[in-house]
Image (cartoon, rainbow, N blue to C red; front, side, top):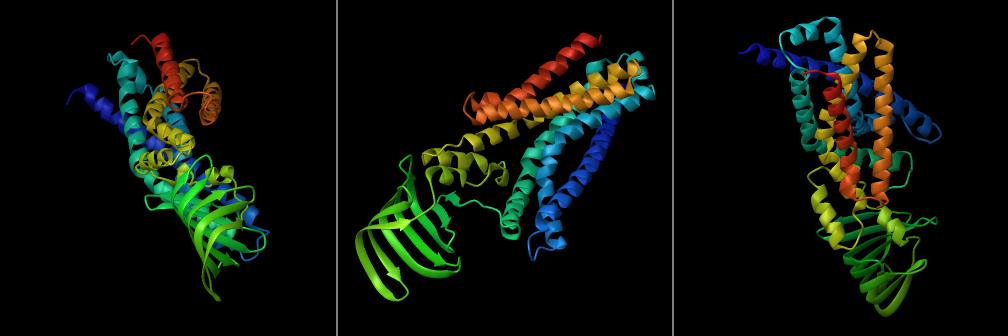
Amino acid sequence: MTPGATFSRYLAGRFLVWCTSVFVAMAVIVFLLDYLELIRRGASRPGVTLLSLLEMAALKQPYMAQQIMPFAILFGTMLLFWRMTRSNELVIARSAGISAWQFLTPAVVVSFVVGVFAITIFNPIASVTQARYEALEAHVLQTSSNNMTVSHTGFWLRQSSEDGTAAVIHADTMRMPQTQLTNVTFLTYAEDTKLTGRIDAKSAVLGQGSWLIESGTRWTPTRQSTPFAQLELPTNLTPNKIQEGFAAPETMSFWQLPGFIALLERSGFSAQRHRLYFDALLARPILFSALVVVAAVFSLRMQRRGGVAWMIGAGIACAFALYFLSDVVLALGLAAAIPVTLAAWTPAGVTWLIGASLVFHLEDG
């Protein structure tokens, strides 16, 4: 094995150790902060226990871990190269003819592999736990929950009112923007548990404050089936509430998103939010590798000038700049001000351009 290959394996191992250490430390801090926030929110809720809040905090952690991964890569890389510069390991490597790009390559490759692992294996796990967390949050803390589900069996809606009545609605198809359901079934409930009636109809159209149901049959526990030509059922749903009621993209795995996006678009709904989230996931391996290059530039150059505090400050500023840029661009993409693909890939592309240009400018290798 050549010295260059040995050094690459050594650096890749050190990179994993440092990034994992930073990731674990950040995850512990985030977990404690989330748990304290849940305790604050649950303090005024009767019957809420610390154990149930602890379960919620644990279920939320895989999703939060996805959010802190880029920052763990950034700070882990900075600490790695700062430590190797302090111990003169990089000085010896440079004197042996190893260029900056050569000792960056192992970390870049490993970060790319970590990104692929994050979206293909870790993301499906995080999506399941996040869906469970949101369900527990709605039940324990009595927050609003998703009221619409789309599958190959049709559309499922749930509506409720302040008087305790509720309805579960199933339809084969839904036509937008008029919000027309075909082959629809309404199951009405009192106090969310007691079935009070069923309505089967050919179609239903969402109007102002009510469903206009046509050509159907109505059943109640005390009466036989009654056919009708037209019927109005009160509702607090609106087209916007229905659109917002879809399952959040964070609760769907990387492998499920393409099929769900295609189903939404075939049904006439906007899949902007889900497509943006999916493209941002695809860009993650590129973003992770770009952060390695940027972090290396900061740590290498600033250590040569003796500025440890400057290195830490620059890293924090870089992290905030990346977070701000991502939020702004993703918001523009969500508002359809720019194409979804451009919005999702801009943070990774800009970070790579900045990092590569700094390396070419500052390093002679």
